[in-house]
Length: 495
Image (cartoon, rainbow, N blue to C red; front, top):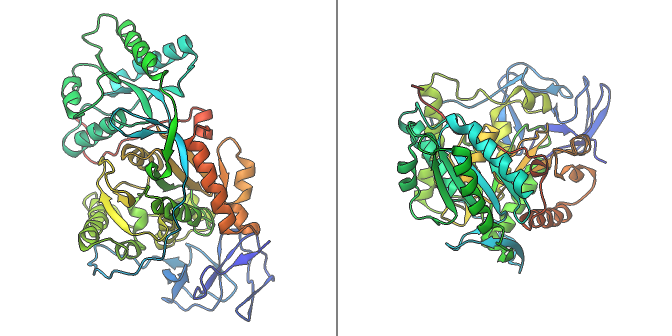
C-alpha cells in the first residue's frame, strides 16, 4: 500500500496516505525528502523549500501561496498558506479539446415509465406541505398510511416537512414554489398529496396552476382550513393514490435515460484522489450513454472554474458559466461576507487548506465531458450530458436542488461521513476505507480501495454496477434508515 502520493508530476507537495512521522523519508522523482514533523493522513508535505509568496501546486494547479517560509519535508496546511483568490473576475473563452469518452454499451435498468414519458427509479407516495404550518399534519398522515398499508406494493411513504411557504418575499418565495413544484412533478413519486393551510403566501389554488401540466390522478390537493376533518380527508386521498401507485411495475429502461446528481460533503485530503475522480469516471460513462449528470456547489467551483468554462459547448454556455460564478460571488459581496470563507473546519482537519484546493478536488466529479448547459436554482433539467446547477455548497440545500432538477439519485462523496439523504436515493461514497469500515450504516460504497492497489478501471466497473442496482430498487443506507429531508435556499428577509 502507498504511504504517500504526488498527484501530478508538477506538484510541489505530496499527500500522506497514512500517518507519517518526523524522520520518515519520501522518495519522489529521484529526490529524497526527510519529514521535519509528523504529517497526518490526507495532509500535504512540502517537496521543496518555499519562500513567502511562493505558489503551492497540487493537482497541477496553484492552490494558494506560502505566507511564511516552509522547509522541505514540513507540513503544509491552512496555518502557513493562503488562497490566491480575489473578488469578481473577467474571463476569456478559451475552448479546449475534450478527451474521448467511453464507448456506448447496451445497458438498462428497471424503472417506472410514467404517463408523460418520464422515468422514475422509485415508486413512492409523497406528502408535500405548501407551508411549514402543516408539517405535523403531513407527518401524521404519512404515519397513518404506513400503518394501514405496511407499504406493500410501493417503495416508501414519506412526508417532507420544511419551514418555508409563508412570510417570504421575492426570490425566496419563488424559490420555495419552484422546488416544491419540481418535487411534485418528480417521476420517483407514484403519487403526491399537496397539503396547504389556507392563509399562507403559497396558496394551494395558485400553486396548482403553477405546476403546469400534471397527472391529476397522481397529484392531489388538500387545504386544511377548508377540510372538515383534515386527517379523514387526507387519508382518503392517500388511499386513492396508494391504490393507483401500488399497481405500477418496473420495466426495462435504457441507461441513457438516467439522470444523476454529483455532490461532495465533509471532504478530506483524499476526496480529489479517490471518490471525486471515481464520480468523474461515472459521469463520463453516463454522458457517453446519452444520460445526464449535474454538478452543483457553485462556491466550490471558485478557483477551478476556468477548467469548466473552457469545456463549454459554446460561447453561450461559457457566458452562462461566467454569470454562474460571478453572480454567486456578488451574493457574498451583497451580504458583506468574505467570498472565500471556505473550507470548513472539518475540511481543514481532513487536509484541505484553501478553497482552490477544495474546488480542484470537487470539480473532478464532472469528469472530462463537455459542459452542455447551466441551470438556475429551481430549474428542471432539459439537456442531456454534463450540466452545471446554481446552488450553494450546503449539503442538504444543494442535494435538494439536484433532486429537484430531475436527478433520479445523488452520488455523494465524503471523507468525514454523514448520514443524511434528500428526497431521492443518496449514495454515500467514502474517500477512504477507514471511514467505510467505521460507518457501515452511513456509507454505501468505498472508493478508498484506490489507495490499496485497485485500479480505477476495476473500481469504475464495480461502481457502475452498484449505481444500476440502486436504480433497480436496491435501497441506499439513507433509505433503509429513513434519513430523508429537504432544505430550501433562502437569501432575503422573513416577514
